[in-house]
Image (tube, rainbow, N blue to C red; front, side):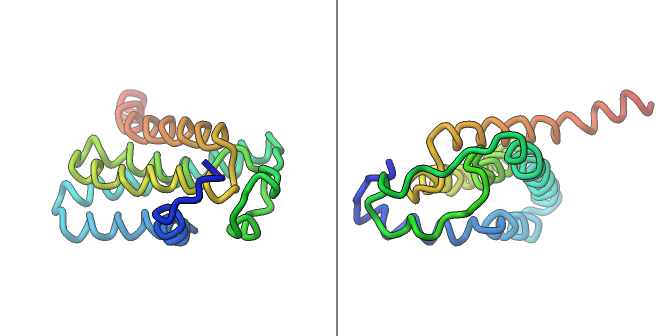
Length: 165
């Protein structure tokens, strides 16, 4: 994937990475949902942002601190994007964790918005490997963390009501 020298990839993936940096893409999606989607949009946006926050915490503040993994070797990446990689642990992909958590948390509340978010979510995961920032296993672990974070966010209200009620 990192060696993929497609004009399509060279054109589309760098802007996807820029949009996903610091979760800008997902904050913009949440604002659009909240503004245009009424009650359903606000519920979906809240779930998405909460899921994203939990995933970022689990991926970046916990997993990256426990598992120190070097980034893929620069020699494996035949394009210039390899110079602009983070210095943090490669495992897991925090970008992927945030993207998957946001999308998976949004989908139960607003399935159409979740389907729309699935496109950039997939592109973010592809971009993380293509840019040489992550191994495929880092992205897979990020996706698993994102799914777990979304499940936690979806289950938390029921658990709280059961224990407090």
